[in-house]
Image (cartoon, rainbow, N blue to C red; front, side, top):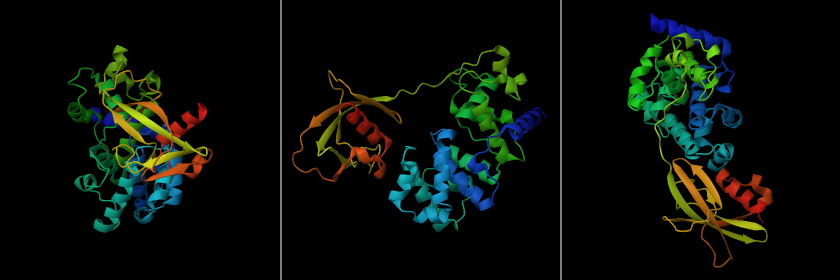
Length: 327
C-alpha cells in the first residue's frame, strides 16, 4: 500500500510538472521506440539541456532506423559534433544495422537482446525497456540514485554501492504506467532533488524522506580517481594553417583528427599549457612548436578561420582556439 501511495504521488507530480522534451512527443509506437533509442544514447554522460538541440537536428536528418543504418559516417559524426564520446554515434549506427538485419527492423523488447547491441549496457537496456516498452523496471540513473539515497538516507559506503541501490529501489514500487513512472523518477531527481539545494517544498514525497526529516541533504559519493596522464602536443604551422593527424594511436577520439601527440610517463619538471578531463583521464598537455620537416603520414592542414567547415572533435577545436589566442 505504501508503494502505491509513493507511486501515485510521484506520477501525479509528473503529470503536472514534466518537461516537454522532444523524445516525449506523442507519436506512433515505432517512432517512440526510435526516439527513445536515440535519446538514450545521447543522454549517456550528457545533460538533457545539451542534448535537446542535437536530438532535434538528428531526427530531422535521420528520421528512422532504416535511414540511420545507411547514413554516411562522416555526416553522422558531423551531426554528433560537440556532444563528445563519439563512439556512441558509431555504436548507434551499428545497433541500427543489427536491428535491420536480425530483428526485422524493430527495436527488440527483450532485455538480453537489447544488451547484446553495441553501446547498450545494463542501464540503457533498462531505460529502453521501461520507456519504450512499458516494462516494470526502474533504471538507476544519477537522478534516481540521488532521490533514493536521500529518501532512505543512504550514506555509508556499503549502502551506496550499486548492488545495494538496486535492491533498495523496490521502495519506489511499480506502476502500470511504467514508461511514465521511470521518467517521473528521473524528472524528480533532475528538477527537484538536485545535487545541491534540493527544492523539498516542491517534492511530492518529502514528508516520508529521511534526509528531509534530518535536514541533511549531503550526498556521499564513491570516489573514482581520474588517471593522471601527460602528453606532449606538437604544433606544426605553415601558411597560417595547422597540421592534424588521424588518430590511430590513442583509444580516446580514435580515427578523429587531432594534433600530433605523444604520451609521456611521469615526466619531471612538466610545465603544462592545457588540461582536459576526458572520461576517466586527467590530461596534462604541454605544447611544443616545431618546424615542418619530412611529411607526416595520414596528416592534413586546416585553416583555423574555417573550423566550422571541418569535422573535428571539441578537443581539437579548443586547442586551435588556444593557439590562436596566444599567437
